[in-house]
Length: 64
Image 1 (cartoon, rainbow, N blue to C red):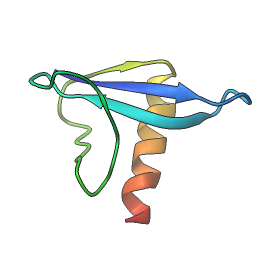
Image 2 (cartoon, one colour):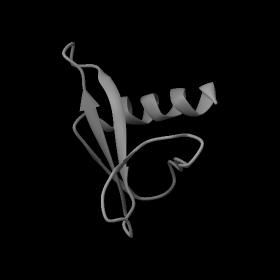
Image 3 (tube, helix red, strand yellow):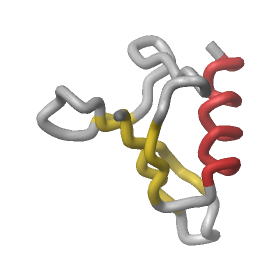
């Protein structure tokens, strides 16, 4: 199961999301060029509400 970890800024907004793949040694900052977010794939969300993290990931995917 992948893990998405929200990093918050001083205004309590998501500044970055880290991705921890189940086979990885450690988390990496989400990069739409390297990572694919699939909402149908089971995942764990930490640091912010699930919908906030999903919205942030979707916005990053639309930019690239």
